[in-house]
Amino acid sequence: MRLLTSFGGFAAAIAGLTAGGAMAQGLEIVGRPVDGKMGFQPPATELAQDLQGLDHMILIIITVISIFVTGLLLWVAYRFNQRRNAKPATFTHNSPLEVAWTVVPILILVFIGAFSLPVLFKQQEIPVGDVTIKVTGYQWYWGYEYVDDGVSFDSYMIGAPATGGENRLTPEVERQLVDAGYSKEEFLLATDTAIVVPVNKTIVMQVTGADVIHSWKIPAFGVMQDAVPGRLAHLWFKADREGIYFGQCSELCGIAHAYMPITVKVVSQEVYDKWLEGAKAGDVVLSAADVAEYSTIKFAASN
Image 1 (spheres, rainbow, N blue to C red):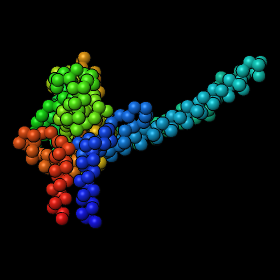
Image 2 (image 1 turned 120 degrees about the vertical axis):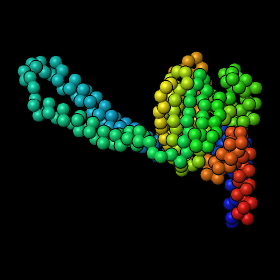
Image 3 (image 1 turned 30 degrees about the vertical axis):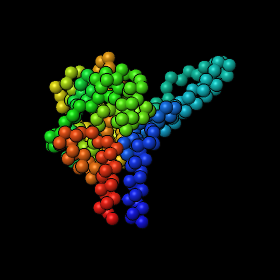
Image 4 (image 1 turned 180 degrees about the vertical axis):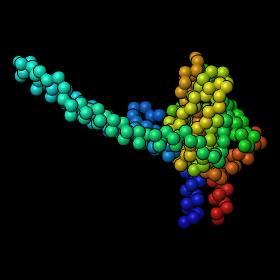
């Protein structure tokens, strides 16, 4: 049984090479927008789960309020129109009603605040990180530095002019995507190098900008932080699911703003340790071969 389980894990990693948009480089693609679909990306952190839960709760509240107010307007228009009330009433106020429409909204706002403030505090209170990464926004790419490990690299969109592309899906760009282990569905999302982090570990990002204001955002993690030149801001996340996640610069930063994506690969601690060892030697790209090689090592060690 252990043999079959290990072989199945190895086969799944290899299958990721040919599974199109579902897998890339031996990892499942989790955080990617999908044409024709609505809603949030699958949450991969507790922060994202909290934000999406808060959004759903507020959506229910505002839907009920909107239906109530719309119904009330329609009822008033029907009940108190000129034909039904040729002689208008002469009263000027109703104290109980005025108190109610003041107190009830206050109670609703207090209720919303009781749930939203803890979510905000959780985002803003930066914990001690297991891995600390400094990210610097440039026009138009990202620079990353693992501050405790002496690893640094730049990350460009595959197909950007700096990587030999033309900001459009040409045969040459598609070849670059395939060579990097992606498919054409990941065009405008995939980068030549990616952040690699271990699953279920606290990651602290130090965010700044080198020229203009950028913004580092990963929707599936529920994080976004402006990268302001001269300032060092922080965000944190703890991904609970292995896979590949995509984000974008979310602050208008110039003519190539739309071509400044973010790629994050969440892997097991063993794969991360192996990647970090190679990254310290200058090989910062985590490829499908790296993931498959570790799977082979684990397979051999367990039998």
